[in-house]
Amino acid sequence: MSDPSRPDGPKIIAVANQKGGVGKTTTAINLAAALVENGLKVLVVDLDPQGNASTGFGIEREDRDYTTYDLLLDDAPLNEVIHPTTISGLGIVPATVDLSSADIELISNEKRSFLLHDALRQVAMDSYGWDFILIDCPPSLNILTVNAMVAAHSVLVPLQSEFFALEGLSQLMLTLREVRQSANPELRIEGIVLTMYDQRNNLSQQVEQDARDNLGDLVFDTVIPRNVRISEAPSFAMPVLAYDPRSKGAEAYRALAQELVMKNNRVAA
Ligand code: ADP
Ligand code: MG
Image 1 (tube, rainbow, N blue to C red):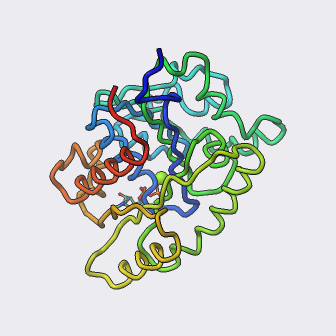
Image 2 (cartoon, rainbow, N blue to C red):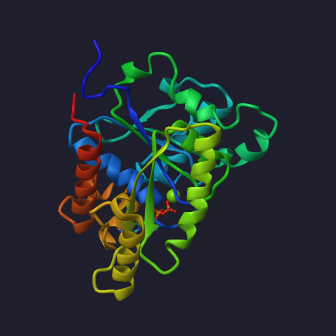
């Protein structure tokens, strides 16, 4: 019998923005950790050759024997590339720099945009019991990000609270529309989350106002503050929720997870 809390298997969300340093990886790591605190099971797929999400969960480079590269380009089964993390209920498919050659290697592959989609929908996918799959995208609108958008149900966009933040969005939306037209008509925008928000800074407030005026309900109520504990946590190979559970950063990601769970009506099985 199907589980009413997970009607269609895992909810797959691409965390994407072609700008680097806007908080994609930080959001993927900490949102995953916050969802797991709610008893949900979360798989993070590291789709960035820089492998920052893998590092952030303490997966050493020498332990990345099976990676996203094998999943996409060597037909490795999903269950063989998932690495456990120190957090129960949270798995990761790690990435290494190998993945940076995907663009070139895939040029002549007709199914190049569907590789992640197909990999995440292998037979018996449901039996893995993941509630959410979060895909940490590279800072580019390349074939890897397109794979994420084709595989995903929705896109979650971290937006850094700084000048020009909104301008980059139009390019992202264009790619999203193209993916809808060509491969994934159901693709939704999960939401836009303001990151590195500084309450004392007029610019942060202005960016927030512009975002809410222009994008309305697409913008999450929760904003992620600029918080030094968030930036320290990766060097201790843990989410800020584990590194400093009472920090403002940890609280903000918990609030974001709550919003996401409410929107998706997902509860722990
Ligand atoms: P992206 O994945 O979009 O390139 P990251 O998540 O790696 O961005 O974030 C870029 C840098 O900013 C990292 O050093 C990260 O630790 C830091 N950072 C991200 N979010 C915050 C925040 N809310 N407060 C402070 N530092 C942050
Ligand atoms: Mg990143």
